[in-house]
Image 1 (cartoon, helix red, strand yellow):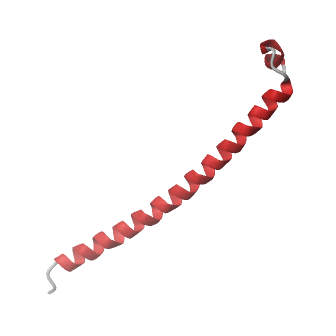
Image 2 (cartoon, rainbow, N blue to C red):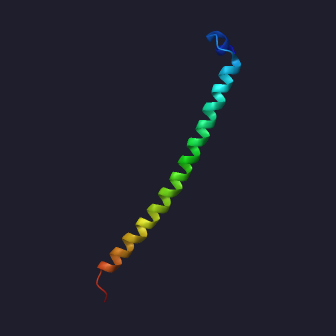
Length: 61
């Protein structure tokens, strides 16, 4: 790893940092995936409730 040698950092340290950051990225992506699924679920509920309100407000006949 030429950049690590140039900066004076041991390659093992840089590799450890990289692995740590990659793990954090995986954790954040897992949370994002969960939140996107939750957002879609809530938007579907919102849509259904808005349809229910619209149908309740319209006159029957």
